[in-house]
Amino acid sequence: MKNAYKEINDDELIARLRAGDEDVVDHLLDKYRSVVRRKSNAMFLIGGDTDDLNQEGMIGLYKAIRDYDPQKEASFSTFANMCIQRQMYTAVEASQRKKHSPLNSYVSIDEREELENIIALHENSENSNPETMYIDQENAGNIRRKIDELLSVYEKKVLNLYLSGLKADEIASVLEKKQKSVENAIGRIRSKIHEAI
Image 1 (tube, rainbow, N blue to C red):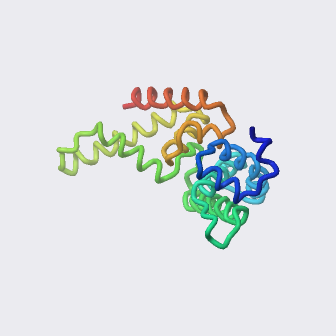
Image 2: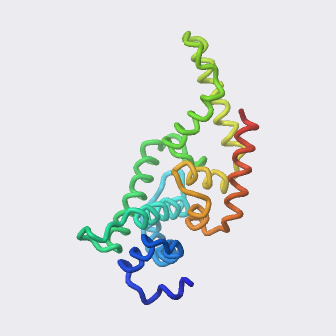
Image 3: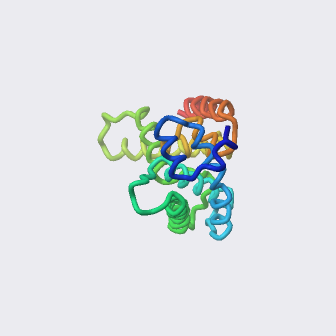
């Protein structure tokens, strides 16, 4: 089916996507994957690697596909390049701010805060004295470390994308995996987080 899109320009592809043709997403992700790779090879992510930047670039590309408005002046190609680059620069800047703590967990500060909110549901929020609050924070830190230890590199990448709002099929496209593999990973992640808390 994707080969049927080869002769169609990007604006028409976006129009088809907006009309409900979901296969367009996979075609555009494949079409612009080489752009993402070229850009990731030209950047450096402290504590990360080219795969991390590729993933960030694919997230930027997905956002471009989702948000592109043909009524604006820029072409889809220009808009996609801008979104890819912005996503990568944000990752590089974040890694430079955290250069004294490597990004080997591949869960960003924002996602960690969301994960903390999940963990916070299991803490006793009624205790407001400083000693109890300190102990609760220490326990939450221990839980986060345990989750980091329990998850594989692949599961951390899936979690990162899942917490950024992508669905299983979208994560599968970004990571070039089968949807079933992503769904299984999400199931394992939930079990491991439950085990950690």
